[in-house]
Image (cartoon, rainbow, N blue to C red):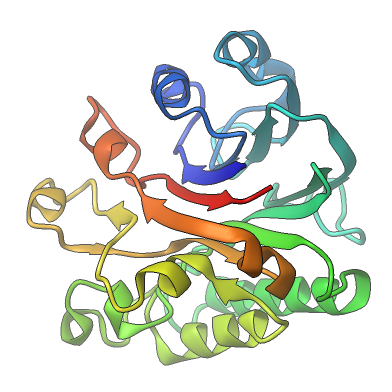
Length: 258
């Protein structure tokens, strides 16, 4: 079974990218972030034509949005945090698929160190940790994936000295994300690839960043112990980042012996 995650940066603008990539790579489950699409406009039929059979999505116009596309039935769908208001940003969707509890998130960017939105980012990460503490069991098959908007380690940035005290790599953000990880998660890419340097995001406003591989690894697939034991591979597919008018992110995939 293959689970993939991809910040698509608008499903409407890049629907052909998702279809083309899905037909070639055939993930069993694809988690998307930044769909930027209201639910009534979500393009189910083209994605069904690409091989997906079940869908769960939570979107809004022009911002945020998450979705899960699956070749298996989706059950027990949860949209956002249980105590979120209807007006809350659309950033979390959880489903049960093939016996796995899968949580797909788009963690807030944070904007600037010390800003109100930065504090909201830290609070959102803390809420996510509480969600796992209160509602999830480490002994079960659990996967957390998505755009975490944090590069946890120096290996996850192309030049740590250039990113010191910058968003995505501040000490405060990294401590917060480590606190989430201590719930019992394993970073599958690092588990499989050890100290290999690869990235999932390159700045679109600096076109040479992709050519020179000046990126960050901020998109992740993490797993509970029982799911980690089943993981046979985890990799980043850079190819879609070179598509015409691409998302600034590349997909991450993990294979499990299920």
